[in-house]
Length: 438
Image (tube, rainbow, N blue to C red; front, top):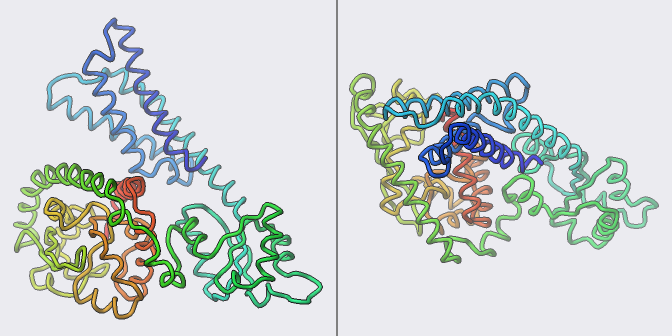
């Protein structure tokens, strides 16, 4: 139900807006589908859904008050947007009954959808109780990841080592005992546990009782949306990559890039005078920041951004949070993610895609490739304006962060497809609307 909540929210919005539109047409004796109001109703409901997702609905708000504020904010944003267009155009695009009726119906509707999503999340979390059979000692790290941003909610109830689970000749088979005592319904086996016949036999017995059995890599992939470090060497070169092996996907992805980049270019043209004005006041210097990055096939290109730092800082190492080189106006650009807009030019040139691994500087690539196995596999595809690692993992600049992000990037390469690309774009839009600056 939690995964269906966004679809239910979108469907409910469509039923509400189109239903109100049809009712108004019937009451005033005109054809709804034959008038321009039908098209504007579709635009209005699209803005409503986008605004709702942007403020975190249906799964973001944690309290009833937060849900009410988010629902009111989403509907108000959509109405203001339509009202501005109506004011500029000098014509009533949608009846007031449709606009105000949508608020009356959708605010409690969005609150209900949020409640259903959280109830479903709680039920899933209670249902997925994980028993880990692994030699790894980073149990707290895994537990923290399950609490932070899982793809499927779960709780780690226990961990035993393969040596403990083996229990050859013991009167009790420890894996069976722990699974039963902890109420585990998912058992995860690392590579060592999978190679042990006694452990596999116990896992098979649990499987017969309805317990789900997963390898460590399958669990990371399905529950966390990444691949574990221990599995990278084994799987990095053993799967098809959409951008390399699926010509149809390549064509559709390229078309999506062009459509989104052209839309972004219109925004870039509109925003540039504002940025020029802001630079003249509080960010004096060149408009654009250019920096070499490594693209597909290891080829270098110049990435474009609106400059956000002082002119003596733009050639330095990657910025960190609270970097003193970032100007006041530059921080505004970063918080609003406007500094990334010039990269639509990189997309139109074919150097970037909308979705893909973020490109790194050449010296960082050389450094990381020497330390992280198969790091260069990320260069098999075009880098992206946004990516799976960006929506799943916060900004970081050291080797451990690079390794963590690589696990998400390899997951993206393994699952690359239009559905995942659109999912990443949607999550990115939510981040931008929520003003999660770097």
